[in-house]
Amino acid sequence: MWSSGVRPSPPSNVSVWQTDRPHAVHISWQRPTYSAVTVAGYVVEYRTVGQWVPLTDRLPAYRNEYRWTTASRGATYRFRVRSISSTGVRSEPARTVSFQTSGKPTNRFYPRDAMHSAVFATATCPVRPSVCHSRYCI
Image (tube, rainbow, N blue to C red; front, top):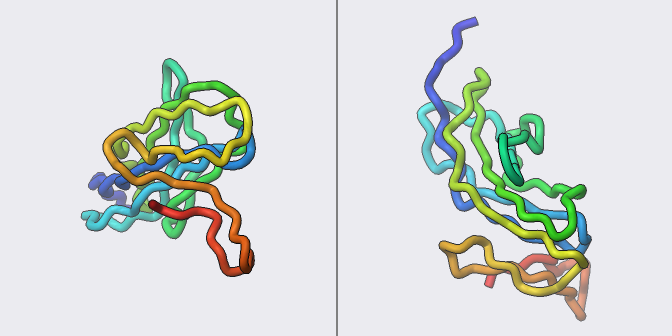
């Protein structure tokens, strides 16, 4: 099988926030707007110190978010996401995002990252929960 060494473009705008569970962290990203090769999937990596550790196996290309449910309370993590081509070639990583988990569930606002002004909030819809979103970009 012929394998192209051309790297796919990396994802962008990696965002990290804590969910309503104390051990759960939500990571999302935007797909590359252009890539020289088709993006077949993504891999999310993290580290506290030392080497980068894969948090996921190859996620399918239609996914652009991942919820990690075993994060440690009060820990500081660095996350990054890479695109993967159909031949297994990985992109350069997207910009790394640092995040510190809290020790308890919260409904507070969390910044997407230091370079953006958007934040995400968790909310409950008082009217019809079946048609409301649990995440709003403000």
